[in-house]
Amino acid sequence: SSDVCSSDLSQLERHTTAAGILHAGTGIAASVVDQGAREAAAGAGDADELTEALRPWRQAEAVQHLAAAAVDAYVAEVLVMAAEDADEPDTTRALRALRGAVSAYAALADLLATLGVDLPPVGRVLAVVGGAL
Image 1 (cartoon, rainbow, N blue to C red):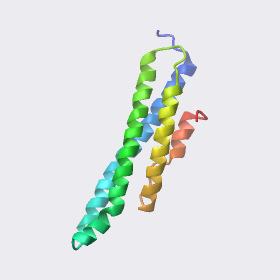
Image 2 (image 1 turned 90 degrees about the vertical axis):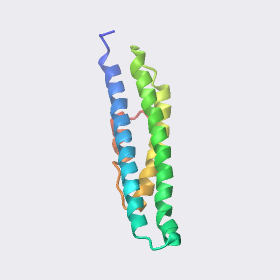
Image 3 (image 1 turned 45 degrees about the vertical axis):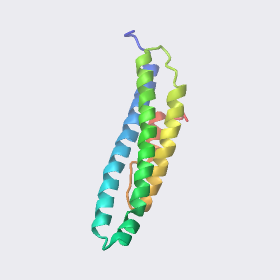
Image 4 (image 1 turned 180 degrees about the horizontal axis):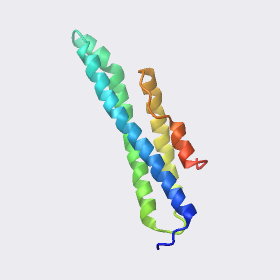
């Protein structure tokens, strides 16, 4: 129906915005991790140094993959919510997916911070969604 209640729309819009921030953050992380690994590899002299230099970046890559998967799951739930076209969309699954995404993203941001990389803070995402969690 075209007469969507404004509060429903804003709820969907908030989730859409949060999903966008998380998706962009994990995308930035993927680029940064690739670049960091390349630079670490370039500075290594032999195989042992290479393994050692790449270790933190391999770990970051694994955590980035987990975060990206969690964010993709959240994006999928937001799309389901958008497709429902209900007066009051059920946000239960989207919120559960958001919790997983935020948790994985926070772990990624913390790990990257130890490597000198700053992602958009997870607080920005939570501020967008509001007190939903």
